[in-house]
Length: 199
Length: 199
DNA sequence: GATGAATCTTAAGATATCTTTAGTATTACA
DNA sequence: TGTAATACTAAAGATATCTTAAGATTCATC
Image 1 (tube, rainbow over the protein chains, first blue to last red):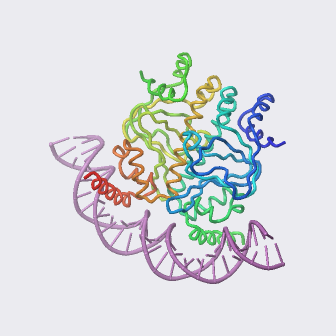
Image 2: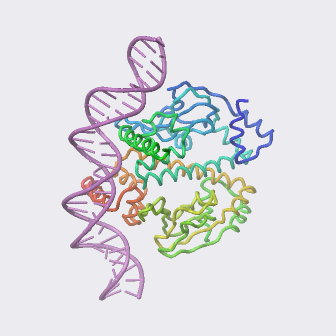
Image 3: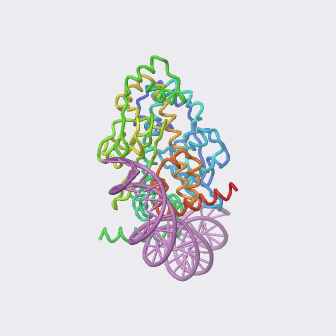
């Protein structure tokens, strides 16, 4: 069923009764986006949470010079939204775009807030999910402080092998805080090192 | 009273009944640390959350070369802990040390988890707090991707004026991902620019 | 399957930031 | 209040990363 994945994702942290699951599913709808279509446009206010059933998306920021900087990727079983825009109810400063044709589960956040007051288990789910996300963000932050570009990329490949081979290099580059050109020289180096090691 | 601050902090997001507040206070204790004392040592498992009643602390990571990288500062009314260590129940990879003699409110996290199952309002408080923290971390992440060192420092001074004048420069430097020496040249430049502007 | 668009690759010169070192000022604490 | 420890400042040479530009591949779409 179309909501199986999201329910299984939630069950990692909390157990909902069948009745709670059914009530939760009433909040959900399916949204499909084609490759290159925007899920969220800079300047719009983000009112929804999304869970990826199928496909691949990226969240990016455009600086004054017009350069794009990727902040987040999402593939199957990941959540995506713009927390800043959603919590402050302010215009978003970034875009979310599909890198592949994608199928998403959509939840209106206001409805979700209301639901959480009645089902504390779901509140708990998000509290625990956010804890985990904060650990991940903290880790990325730390890496930016002390790792060299090459180390960051090696780590990225280890940590997200599924992404490394699915996303164009130029997008990984700006996610790591590098220009695509410089990234490429590192990429060549890392591949060479890997080849050497596997001999 | 010694728990007034933390209760007021919680009331920003949720309303607890007097009975709930009293029960919550039963979980709390006061811990004082002298300047330079460690609140958490690398390798130890973090089992507590702390709220700063008075003082100033920093969380930092030591790299292979022995260089310190600051990840987080906390002053009055801020929370501090090592989320990674606490959620994974794994040895911490960083230290928390007092920059000034400080007074903290301490909560054992296991007790807090149990309490949250009984008082969903508190679960909600942390869910909302984490949302806010994630927005902040996301913002810092973004800055590291596209801002120049000077821009990052100017932003830091705007955003955290209380910290900018309270924390040694070398610690702000590594928080921004810079060496203290290079930071200093920027510092001089930013001060000069500010002086010019205020003429 | 052909064609234009997007992406990757490479390289040379420019720049931001780091490293090392040393001297000066400030602060902590006895 | 004096003194050692810590923090700040400054400058020269080294290095990582960026910028620009151009050619080579790969990919998307008709």
